[in-house]
Length: 200
Image 1 (tube, rainbow, N blue to C red):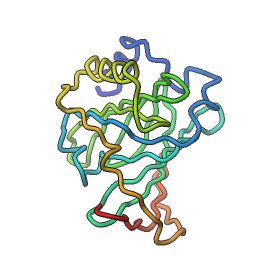
Image 2: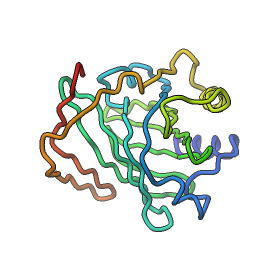
Image 3: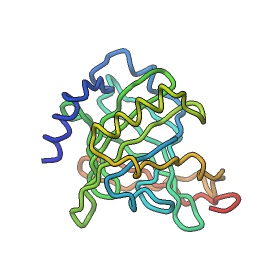
Image 4: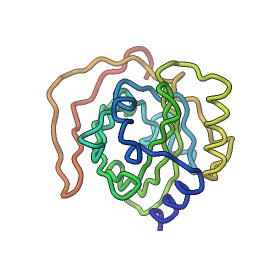
């Protein structure tokens, strides 16, 4: 059902996602940071929650059939870094993180990315999340308007929007060795925890 809803939203919002544009690979790849997040279940994006993701980088495979998301999440006093690989299915990507996740990415310009996903956790609860990634720490008035319109059209309340960038602490890796966990369809690389500098 969530797949059908996402496809309807893509059509309704006239979204040009990553896989729809052959020339977008060079534009989307690079370093990104999470500026704002909004969620239908705001508890899932509060500080210390698993869907409060601090992005670092995005890469695409050949023809963007796979998309590689690099981010970290605060886990108590530690910051856990993740590499999540989404696999393309029709007009969206599927990945496994905190359950099953179906997501899309919209290119606004070379400095701004909008993304939206459905996350079905291990208890079967479905949460919608809409976020904006940027190269800079501040959005222009027009960029913020585009994001808020995006959130509204998806059906998430304005009061559920949170600025994430202000709570992002600097981190240093404890170890550079990665551990791999395999799934039949998805691959997630989980390195050892990172240590947060300052107050995490």
